[in-house]
Length: 457
Image 1 (tube, one colour):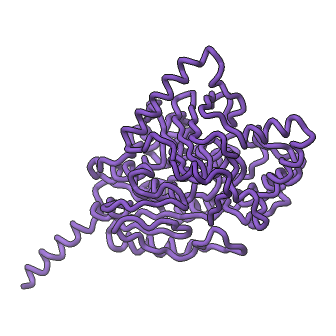
Image 2 (cartoon, one colour; image 1 turned 180 degrees about the horizontal axis):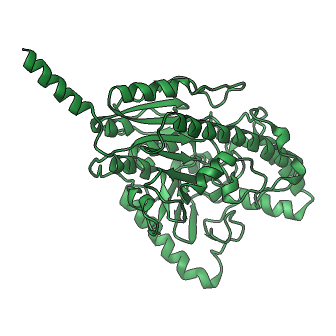
Image 3 (tube, one colour; image 1 turned 135 degrees about the horizontal axis):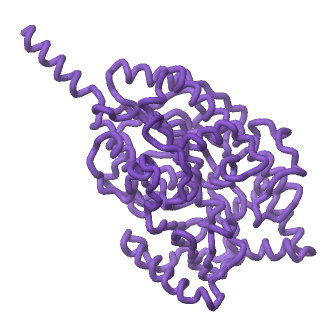
């Protein structure tokens, strides 16, 4: 009996031990903060020293996209490795049942990992248990938030004691509205760098200052995460991934397929394994789960996502995806295809004013700039041009997102781009068909006409 007990104990230890050489994972995800909020991406007024330092030591991916620029679908894409149409979360307000969905824990637990999440969850798919880690607020809309890394430390210590690997997700709530955390005074409004498509108004400048103050808090959390990793001796065996999430809640930001809303920053750091460099390779949130499975020693899960492991570990690979598909259905039916340089956007109902009803809210500060912009557009030609561009998209728009990342210069009607528009329209339809996206604009959206759509996010 004693021999059987010893053999059973040894077998249990082998099963519980992590795969040889497999790393741990810590994933930090921001909230309502896109690629264009950091010093490492060229924002002079940013105060993001920890993120900038991490970027300098990481594979910095500047062309990282979400399929839908809203909280729930983005996190569903991240945690399932599937496009929105395949995981069923099409928007915060539009979900369809997809039986048999697996989440990040379903994939990693069989490989010897414990999977836990601290902070914002906004996700409920799959059967795999994602442990709750205390210490971070789960309500992104809350004021007066504080945080502690004690729960994260305890979780990591427990998994190491059990001879398992860990995947810890820290879901920050910054820089989600109400934009009342951090020190707004750190960002004098007169010296702020506004996105090129913004109308320069007092409320717009204050909104950018408020958002930047929240991003500074996010940066502090990234710095504290790295301090914890150093103190616990984790840097050599832990992959740290920072994801910025979708863009700021401003026009053409969150809720839109434009770069200001759908493009994120991804940083991947693993000391001694991931060379520090900057990559313009196209990638998506659904690529993260396959990457973790690959690094953990698992087999190809055959998801929509594609492993980034080879790209991250190489100092020369420059390609990952040929194209990125963006698939908004609410508040507006808009589809987009992003290639290496150009992006085509298809608006299914261009006759409908394309400004989300949330921007008429009296309770959210981000609605105030829009009200100023509309007022200025009555007398100022530049303001009118920018407001009209937001409200009234063309059925098809084409942008050079390398030279024109805020998509001010629509190339779709220029004769020299006629062939490119035709080719990219066909490529968009083909990719939509391949992944199961309906290729007809949503009829129910058309019936809504000019009614306002509202969302909790």
